[in-house]
Length: 218
Length: 231
Image (cartoon, rainbow over all chains, first blue to last red; front, side, top):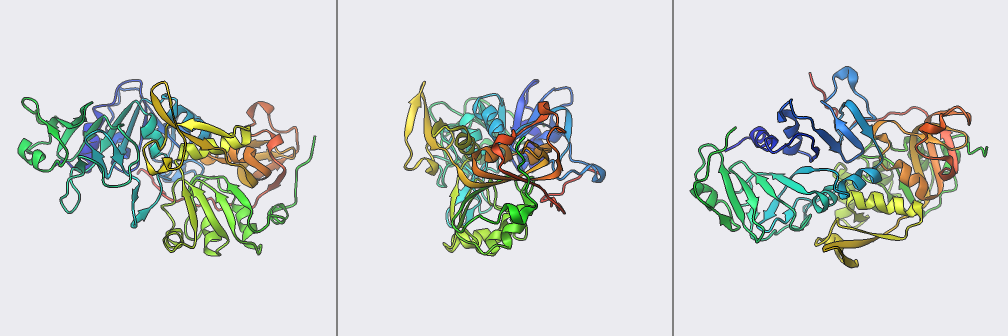
């Protein structure tokens, strides 16, 4: 089983040179730590920044400089700042190449649910609905099962959805999967020491297994 | 040049009535109109509707207005940091419209720009789409969303001049420029107020035409929600 850091590490391998990328809160934020240094990429923060840098030192802290998770940050050289309308114009306009975000549930046709648990949690969707409706490439970072052991990869989402038919790839603590155009989770890689059988057992949605499934290389 | 200066926050917000429809700039606690909020707390008004990306925290920002029960309705995209908010919402004391962040920003922008409605892909197929017109353009579905305009917009900038021109700093810009344009009366508070002519016209983010009242704020706390550092 992969740790959160290892999920982030595996997702970092999907990043390509020259990409503008939006990282969601949680595991996706960790991806930044594993992007190879020889790649030139730019991280977008939907509150109005292109060019997120590392967290500041105590001396560098600026309350007027935060990321979308409200954490204090720094800017890299060549950054740009803009307002929220401009920020989502670049998101909806397809200028951000890759969106990485967390999910509570993903369905076999690529629907994602990550913003609301009726009667329990009402925090709001923030920028997630705009991001999933617009990004060309969406990778989801999530746990394969809930704490009580229920699969989060489902035939259909049970929670209110954030976007329809938008997820392309999922990296969980057990596997890397892609969404088939006609529905289904295509198993691409297994986490080290995890069998195909176990993944099958823990995937409630349709699982597509073609040929030998390689172990992840992390 | 028209002089938009008012003495202080108290004077700036003195005629905001109960039931007013307000916008407040800021993302989390970054770039919020701290002084105007403090002055509103001294007023005996209620039933406010507030458009703001977030709802502050329990003891700062809009959270203070909620605690005093001055707010009837919030129109926001994310409200996760406020226990009092969640309590009032779940008990039905507070009405809340949760809106995708980009849609919120664009609805405000549209309000200031005189565009009554627009189509966006955000929320198609979700509960956000309920009751809204869905239309297909070039093979993809989009929702119609309406503009938002306010009786009063309360914004915060870094520098401003007496003509109402504003310059923001860092990510404290966020929703402030669009809200400035979408308010019938826009109240801008700035950390540094200078005479007209002292700001470089090339660097102005919000032109003074959108601002009706401006004052120099004081004692900015600029509270940080997630103080995160590297060693």
